[in-house]
Length: 93
Image 1 (cartoon, helix red, strand yellow):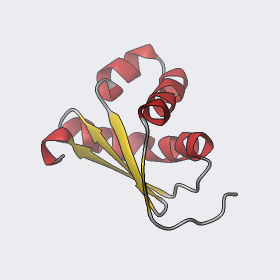
Image 2: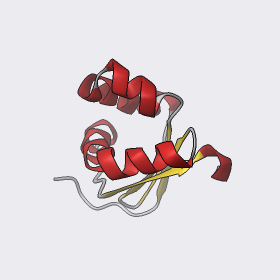
Image 3: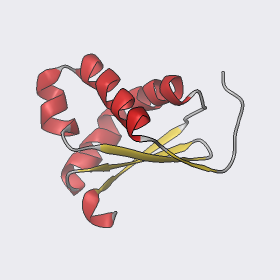
Image 4: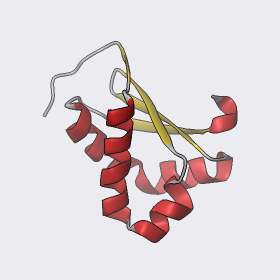
């Protein structure tokens, strides 16, 4: 789909917000407010996207339930291959 690119890429605020907006449309307002409020899509390292969520429980729920969808949305926004989404709690930031 997209060429494999190595190296790290810090996401811009616009890219972060674009991924958030598309995820909000996909999951709906209630789920977005419950899980994705305060999320930050931070960087792409190779094909691994890193994000930070509110806390450990939310990070785990997002990673377990939505990482495949996030990868697809992020790939479209970033025009890069995204194979893995790692969501960490903000305390590890």
